[in-house]
Image (cartoon, one colour):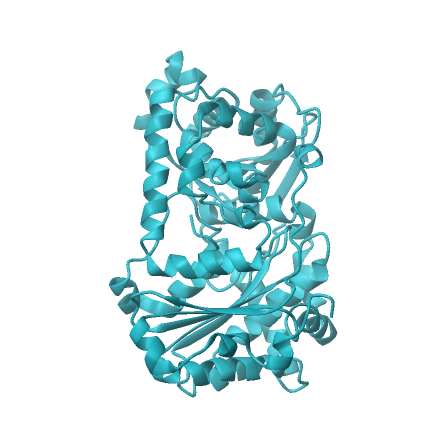
Length: 487
């Protein structure tokens, strides 16, 4: 997977087809971020049709009814991913995901339902994120029970066949090799390593070649015992179902799944990413045609500054609009061919990123203009009251479009369950509406203006000579460069 997929999605939105054709788009199957906005990961507005229950063993069951078409989506969400991985385990959540749909008790015993599952038109896949691993089936309503049984057997009774494990290990290594062969991979990797310098593996869902190559089936069992337990998981069912019937079926299939005695995040608590001590800059030389500028900060964390996350969503949305002062000063003037600000909501430090594409002859001026814009983020006239209210309204409207494809909305629910919890998700709309100028101002001053940051540029050697861009340019104003994390 990406070193920071949010970054890659923003880059993809800026580059467009021409740049992607010159430098193949980096994709890592089954390890992707939730399919929400390309520029920012924002929590979506809850729906009254969402119902949830927690079984006695701690398994949470979430149901979203939609009877418009006879399709059902079954998803298992597990609080796992790179934020649970020290360096020696980095990438093994991703490898475990690849093994999930392989041999289990049912396939070994050749149970009847397994013999016909390939004929039922069931589509299945999985994804690995920083704070979530999720697995999902999409099928027709009559096959709902079959999909649930297969999910039960896959999560509770995996065999970790050695031959299949060796094959999937090579598949994952191949994905990592393809990622590393893409010049844009260096940009997100360097940003990840610099922003989260003490624990970079905790922000790298794909992992690295060395740890994946050294992985064993015993390590898969280790991950299973720690994280694949009911009190660290949720079953999300959406589509043409009745909530009461779902709750009953999940209870029948998963109710006797043994609860883990000790909460995995009490026994193995996530690391605390230390703040940046000072700003830094770097020029990454790769054979690319244009210049990509990227500036990153530590953003708010769920559970520590929830109001900051709402403000981040609204402010990012304002700046992405074509009529914003930000876009007019940078895109409309021709200094950049595209620019976006994004915040990626996470429980364990969500990054804030500005990404811009420009040309070598304009690179230095573009960087200076970006930092000049940042200095004015808190100006009273940087955005209007109308733009603020419009942003909140459009964020809500955007959710209506998301719900049009229920299969994708299922992933959205899982993502927010894992990183924020259902209560945050359900209360999102009300908190979004309450976001004020004061909230946005606090967000800007707490996380962006005058705060240590990382400035990167991806360009060719020839572009560097033409642009005369320096590392100092990428760090912005000298006074800002001297800022420490204690300020």
